[in-house]
Image (cartoon, rainbow, N blue to C red; front, side):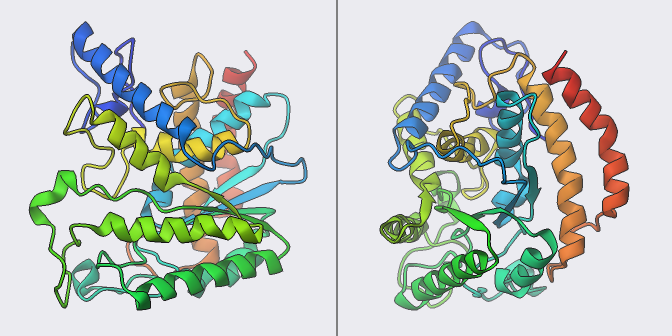
Length: 348
């Protein structure tokens, strides 16, 4: 769940560990507000996020693929909420989050992953089922964070990532759907610097200290695929710029306390390139432009989570630890009340 502070100037997404602030001073609120402005300006100024491509009316179903960052779903619920605000009297596409924690497109898995209990799942084990069962019009894919296994950059691992992305792209196109690629999220070494490992080791049971250099290389390769007509949006650059600008005011600022998983502010920044691409409006705090935006996002997040678990069960996967979802029939009943609340917010 996203949590939003009662502070009148800034949401709690800026305040690790992202709990509502108690009796915030005006100075603290203003300081955090400025940090968020720095973050949001970086999204707007990042390369490759300015061209708009509003969704076509025929786009009835959007499937999101990715790892745990996508599975968390914050950016997806923000995008659906923004689209509903933008088009309150129109049926918007169905957003289906099929992100799976630990997943890669490279098919690689480091020794001792998950304590040795299971290897990283490979998207290509389930991609065919996903495309057959969901029949999407549009696929949004965000991979890379796990694909390098938190090791230094190597030609072999890089080639596995590239071939995995190529195969993903081609299978989606062959299915008749369109695809938008997102560059991988930013790896922030600062908050976990005490447990990072140097270059030159044979094995990395903890992350390589300069792992973001790997993600930068992956991102730049993806961005070059625009020359082939691919649609690629730069999430990595947006997050990296946001952190750099915010650290001018607060040297310890981070969007990911564990270095990997974006907090709510980070998820809002992940949403930014797609929102801009689709011509959707997000405010400086990363929410849709609506007086009850936080409530709307919470309701949509709850709906999306139920839908996610239902479709993960239907399309099957091999990762342990994911709760079983309900049937689509039960899902429709469960979400009916939430839909009525959402409609009452949008059209009071």
